[in-house]
Image (cartoon, rainbow, N blue to C red):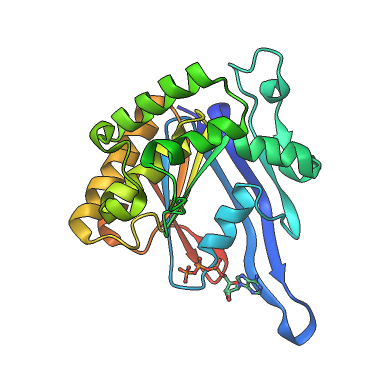
Length: 241
Ligand SMILES: Nc1ncnc2c1ncn2[C@@H]1O[C@H](COP(=O)(O)OP(=O)(O)OP(=O)(O)O)[C@@H](O)[C@H]1O
């Protein structure tokens, strides 16, 4: 199968330079990558090689110095904004916010949960932002918590959950708005290796079953084995493996 035909996310010749003059850092140099629906791509590389920079550019959290990032046309968009391919750099801030809210899910190393909200309320946040009505929100939150095996923990706050449970809440929150793209930066970095493997396996199964295009940066060699494809970044460049 040609990935090109089904690419959900595509970066073309992307570079990111931080600073200028003597302090200039070429964090990413001419990187091109495509990710298809239902594909789990894992990005590995030494500390400082550019993994986070790549994820930020792919998710529209930062703009490339040169090059472009495209979200592929969504066959299910039915005439909506996603019905045609969009270049993230060509979108205004409001449009970019909307894309990040509805089409891209993020999972963070530090989980990023709101401490005063229950697991269910944390998962509900993206749906509130997307103005989904209350009845649909309740159903979608229940479904997302069930998908990560946390139905019985819905009312607990993050401090009352284990690290692995907190990150499963993070995964549920990232996927509850049914994004087409999932980006995760060291999602298991704070977990012991057995828990990390379980969270990663869950993430992989959800990506496959829901046809999400996922890019996950990790240092953990064990997690690499779960990837459909591995990208190696060194000094800002993609290295062929
Ligand atoms: N905002 C910034 N300003 C200046 N330099 C930056 C900035 N963000 C990242 N860098 C530099 O860009 C390079 C790539 O950083 P990046 O965070 O993408 O690496 P990484 O592979 O994710 O590292 P790690 O595995 O340690 O998280 C590094 O040299 C880093 O110091």
